[in-house]
Length: 273
Ligand SMILES: [Zn+2]
Image 1 (cartoon, rainbow, N blue to C red):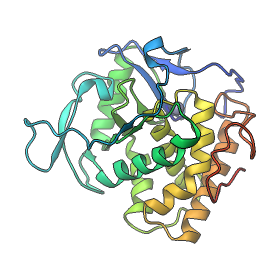
Image 2 (tube, protein in one colour; image 1 turned 90 degrees about the vertical axis):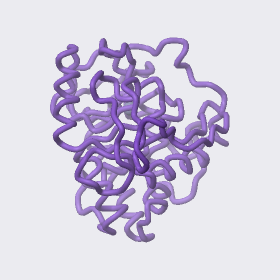
Image 3 (cartoon, helix red, strand yellow; image 1 turned 90 degrees about the horizontal axis):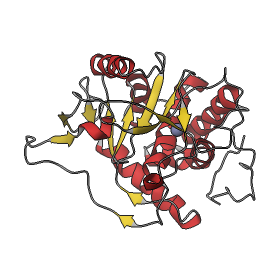
């Protein structure tokens, strides 16, 4: 999960994933803007597998009309939200954005050679609109899981779908589809959330490692999304600043996340702090 954890000065190095007693019995790795979620180590079945090229496009079920993509309940984590979602960019309804899937695949390809635990796969990336988003939050709450009002994104153990919140997608859309350059750390943090969840979809479960890789891949992600060099650099810089402001000292802040360490992916244009 991607979440803001500024209020949590927890320094646990344990692999964390919010264990959620939801209808689909999923374990979800997410990022939220709230605290108070119970954490646990992942089941053995979720331990990262060796890197395998699984470059297959998002599954389009025959039951979905042309131009729509099937999103199963186990990929969302709550029953009732499975659906055939329109495929496109910047739509007002909940949708699957193919550009974000392509960029996620490229980011996993970039990082996999330096971390063999990463699976190279093409995740489906869902942008949930506000109406559906509220339903998802309510369903989580009904199942005893409270992320507060600020869940930014999450990936279930199926790892097939990156779920992004309404605000995360709007901010990402502004960068990717409207050519806008974020003017605040919050606006830029959507990029970090997207890359963070991409790492989860590639089997990285540790929040600190996911955030560390997200920091290193932020510039590349922005460039792949269509940002100019200056915009990509500024977005990556602001996203790193947001992470520092909100997550320093938490499980999202791995002290080994420095140049030359075992977590250094050796990618160009890394902004370390
Ligand atoms: Zn996470």
